[in-house]
Amino acid sequence: MTWVAEVGEDNARWLATESRTARLAREYRPRDIGEGRIEFSVRALGASRELGEEEDGFITEDGEGLRIWIGDDAFDLELVES
Image 1 (cartoon, rainbow, N blue to C red):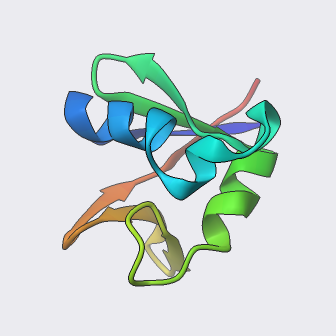
Image 2 (cartoon, rainbow, N blue to C red; image 1 turned 180 degrees about the vertical axis):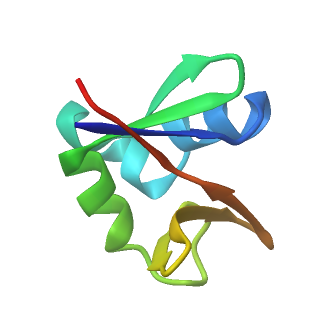
Image 3 (cartoon, rainbow, N blue to C red; image 1 turned 90 degrees about the vertical axis):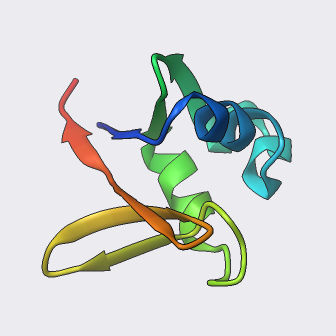
């Protein structure tokens, strides 16, 4: 299973290359899949859930689903079954 969010090209590039989780082993990193989209594996999602609210790229989950936060902007994560 993977999750995908449309976050914009700059945010996708930053999450995949500069965020704290981008420095982890490959299986724990979010992946820029082009066109402003970012993809999270189960392990990458788990690693991002460990980030604190003050860090860009942290994940929240509520009644409306999963969201990734960059600054004050939240982007919905959609489950993609593979």
